[in-house]
Length: 226
Image (cartoon, rainbow, N blue to C red):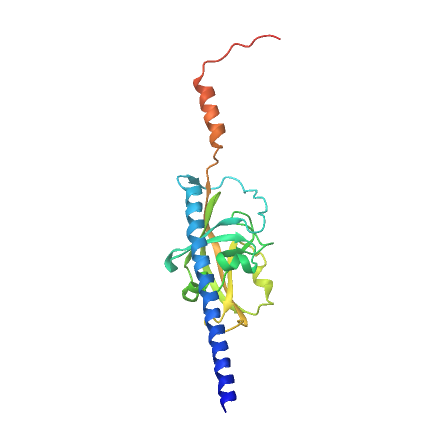
């Protein structure tokens, strides 16, 4: 009986420690994501502050971003979401940010912009999204406003929702049900059409701008023959 009692105590202790470790890992993942979002949002705002925007005159040519690079920031005003988006939807990226699904369109280009996020962190608010909600994708080269057209629930294998349609649009993807314990069996999809876009005015690098200003202020020099 004593041996059985000791065994039970050991099992209880092991389970308790395992539970505490799990809670610690979960808490650290939340803290890590929050710290990253705060710092990345600060850097993004510094890059885009005081940059005038204007309607696009011609289609943009945007180079493919490298994996893990910051694409921009996704804002859903009614749901109070402001989250940095990085390139790729791997586990590391989704642990700290939203992820742009590689192979889908980028903001400012024709097609379907796909963004993935975890249902228990940044995309938890999607459970309250409704038709006609506004979604703004802010980038260093412009801002793109979308209007929610519909939501749907699909299987993870249904990748047709990421295919480009006749209009420029954005698709948000997260696991479903939102409060499911373990690997969720479905995906919650938000689809929104492009409503308007504003492109950031082109800026010259500071050193080049200063040089041009100096040249304009200096008197013209006479050319000498060689």
